[in-house]
Image 1 (cartoon, rainbow, N blue to C red):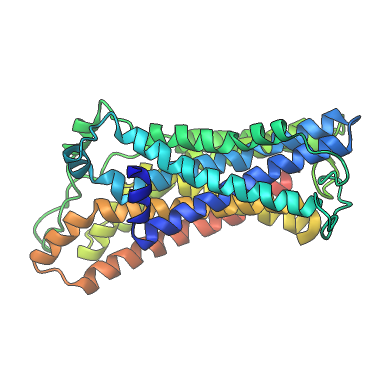
Image 2: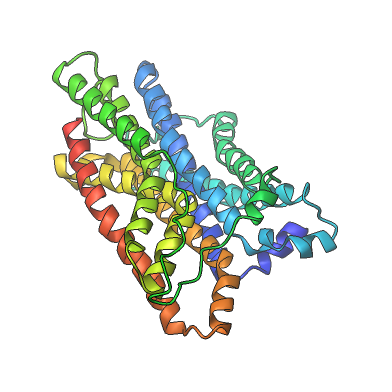
Length: 392
């Protein structure tokens, strides 16, 4: 009951993020049901059916990442003093987050089941538009137990990830004592403070991406046993699929280092107040914002590479849905992380306003951060798209 009241009393941005989570869970649930339908329609093609089910792992991982980001950005979870006064200590906050995410994911899964049954035409009206598709298995009985089992995967995974996202950490006290970005020093008052130490994953990310390109290119030039991909992509070897995964992992691993390097470049030399604030904020939030930005860059680059190769209709119905779920989840995760970061900087922004900083200055700092990230990540997406094409 408390969970339902907190959901009902949430503000509009929090409700939009939960609706986005429900939509993503519904998309993954529909993909799982489509895999089940393909297995029912092609009982002798077990390998292709298993591959289609395995392809759902990427949208599922993107949905789990979105669930974690939505939970951390939830204002209800951040109000720990009020929850403690209501009788919810640190041990029960993960339970509250778990129930909130599970309800949103269950709503999406229920909608996916309703849409899938409607498209199959399990009623007097018959199949609706595309009932002869190989992934609907229209006319064949749908095993309800198997369908419900598949639909519980997303709510359980989202609930577990949300509980882990807000669990009490041993290093929480150390994180709270970490110093905030230094305020800008007046011009001519000496050098600025040393930069914030950055992540060390940039070389490892570049190594993973290089290994992915090499593996994909080698496997593409040596045709072997093909893996039938959903849609009209045809076949790809296991090496090509592994190369794409390594390349995407390299982007995600190297993104925090790229964000930190971007912050150092913005605050280089003897910056003024806007550049120093923007650069120090990017350096401090490299870990928080880097990996979601890397996942968004990888999803965008992969989608651009696929469209560049064979056109927009190459993925087919379920494939296009899976790509859309991954891209929307990556964008939603970045938006949720931005909301979390904005809430974390609220006290610092209020302090700057009390010290005389104008709202225009703060908006200029935010615009400078966004512009710097675009300058860095737009070429990264273009380069990654070319590397994805090379690795096919």
